[in-house]
Length: 269
Ligand SMILES: [Zn+2]
Image 1 (cartoon, rainbow, N blue to C red):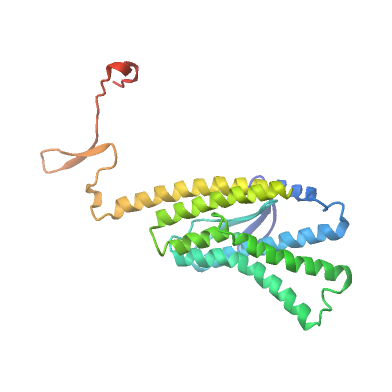
Image 2: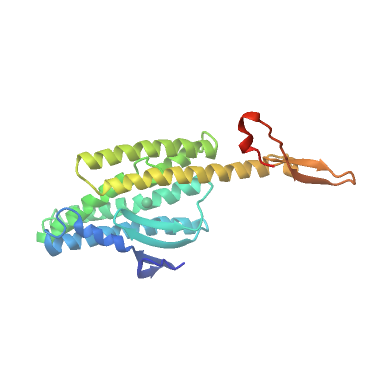
């Protein structure tokens, strides 16, 4: 699906990659413009790693037959839009871990290369500094994404693990509540340390955790309703089964006549 407001920057494994216009806000990050071409190069490399992180999720999802519509980069990170969320906890666990695993692999790869070269890699002038920063940032990215702040990766891991102990609905509610608590912590941390980009991120986590919780609860409700073994004979709220007398039954809305003298204006006739 075409992302109308974003710029397409490429296509990998059949997935369109986009950059959202608000991404240009990253130029306002502290020290980016002042740091000159090197810090801009570092920033672009970091977002290249964020893109690889999202591709990690997308390719893991593909293993479970879930397509990714597109991947878009925002200043607060990347978003891979999966066509659906896996319902199986095992699949969710693998897909959620695949993103941070990519960052860990990049960091471990750079660190190993430096060790093999006897410390020569990170000592190689400006390129060395850049690669060292990139290694550290990838470690931080992996750890940060593993915070149990549903819907961030760590929160999804937590939900998947909780699914082993309770129903998916309760696991989602618990993970989402912890996610909102984490969002408040992350936002406060951002405010006190003047890491202002953490504030929109915390608002995003707070709002999406609430929206996704509501969506999952509704979905699980529908499933429970369809699978209760009571079949279609359970009337949905506001309906009842009416015997038509000819061997057939019909689902009819329950009509209530409300007559409350104190609230006459509210009567619906
Ligand atoms: Zn991720």
